View 1 (cartoon, rainbow, N blue to C red):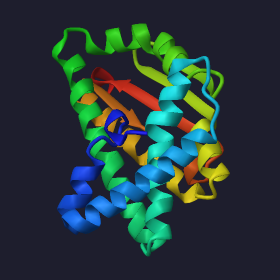
View 2 (cartoon, rainbow, N blue to C red):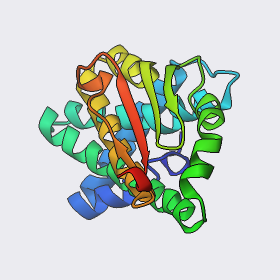
View 3 (spheres, rainbow, N blue to C red):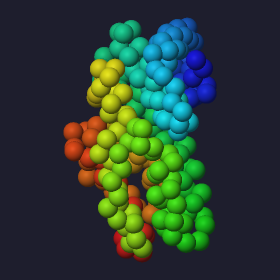
View 4 (cartoon, rainbow, N blue to C red):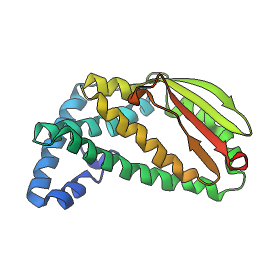
Length: 204
């Protein structure tokens, strides 16, 4: 499996930059091997969005994290490295999200497509979404079941789930100042639900 087709497509370059060509390439080869093994153990979904979550985001990160620990990195070091890689991807997402703020009626457009977007991008096969509010002032939904939590537990690295949780804050910062994102907790961090609140800048 090729990491360059995943959300961690810059992993090889970063490892070489941080650890030198020889060690960086060795680590990358081992991580690719682990990723391929993990992919073989998972069944492809009919839903392409689920496959995107699992094979292009979750398994590449889990594979890198496990490989680093298996090769002498502490849990703290492995978390720091995977956090950096996921954050880099989240900053790309923030730039994409920022494009919406250049359009008039940013919040109105966001609200118009919020439910259909969530239904498509976070399908019921992996997520349970409970809608609380979707009006002119606030969009609020809770995720009470999440494939990210399930997969991290499956591969005995529940602490890794927080890396994905934290990336939301970075990615959604791209909507500022037109839309403000707030959250009180996530399942991965021990809360009963991941609460998502998006506020119109007019109510800030």
